[in-house]
Image 1 (tube, helix red, strand yellow):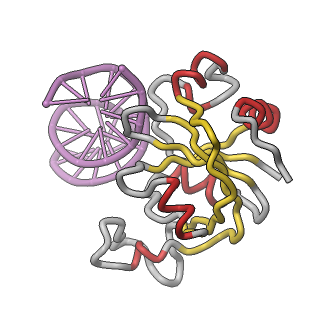
Image 2 (cartoon, helix red, strand yellow; image 1 turned 135 degrees about the horizontal axis):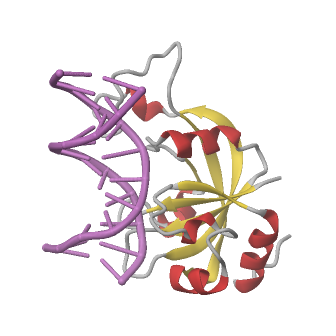
Length: 154
DNA sequence: GCCAACGTTGGC
DNA sequence: GCCAACGTTGGC
């Protein structure tokens, strides 16, 4: 079982939206490195939900992969901003996962705190200039994060 | 709103 | 295949 971190702009899709929906297809990722991580994800993997491009960015919750290798439907939707004219039904370019809401943490773990706690080597997120919206989190760092937010796993 | 960092595009 | 121009991300 692996841990990941995925970014979402709360203006577009917040942890509250996610909780209300219960589960969602993580669509719209159009970066090859991020997509490759999405392809690696397996059912049962856990991912931190991160609020980006907002006043106080940070980790706000946890989700679980419930379906892997999902073809992102927005690549075929001409009305979608994520439409990709070069992708074909026979060999779709963009795969993603379906995730299920697990928890919203009682306290947000801010980027500021993450930067103070972890080195760029420990956590890719705090690397300067990092723009990946999907990234792996090593198991021991994930455990530390879960402790920091007082999350009691079932 | 600014801009650094980085990815992508397209001319050559 | 190089690289300048351009677009996007996302913190500040």
